[in-house]
Length: 58
Image 1 (spheres, rainbow, N blue to C red):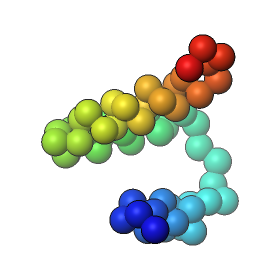
Image 2 (image 1 turned 90 degrees about the horizontal axis):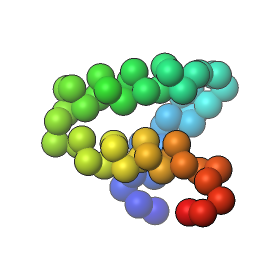
Image 3 (image 1 turned 45 degrees about the vertical axis):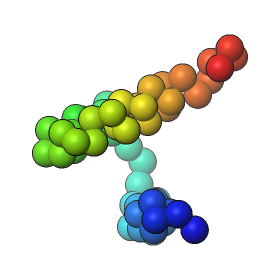
């Protein structure tokens, strides 16, 4: 198990039944990076990956 799996599991346990919009998620990511600028690159990579999930070329 990766260290990050614990956070993902906690997210799923605490909020897994909720429905959210991508706009809400984007706002939370911006807020997180504002508070933690050292995570700007990983958050950018995650956001880009999520945005392009359905791209056939990737």
